[in-house]
Length: 82
Image 1 (cartoon, helix red, strand yellow):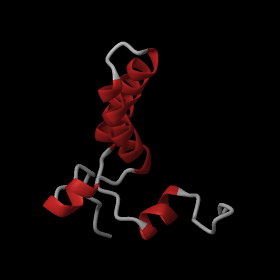
Image 2 (cartoon, one colour):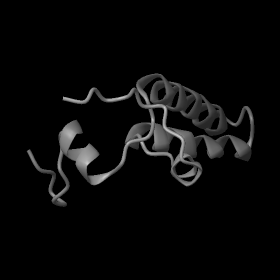
Image 3 (cartoon, helix red, strand yellow):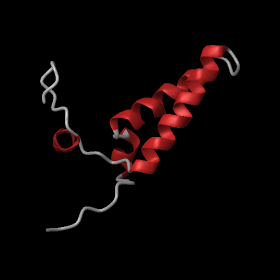
Image 4 (tube, one colour):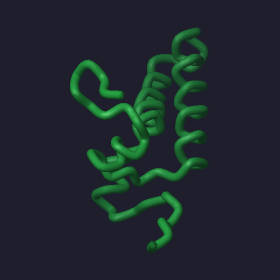
């Protein structure tokens, strides 16, 4: 299945286009923390700084951290050589 913009929709095809550098736990943690920060900012509890939560929310959703790429870090599990 291909999305309307022509991007592949499956995880394997997405990894072929983008070098995923976040593991499962890392992604879930980013999405949860980012979502909490955005929700608190939306409610006005922590002020405008809470909108910074959009960054971990987006990187967790995509699976790609630009800072990890620059630093050569990856939290993905190693793939088995076949």
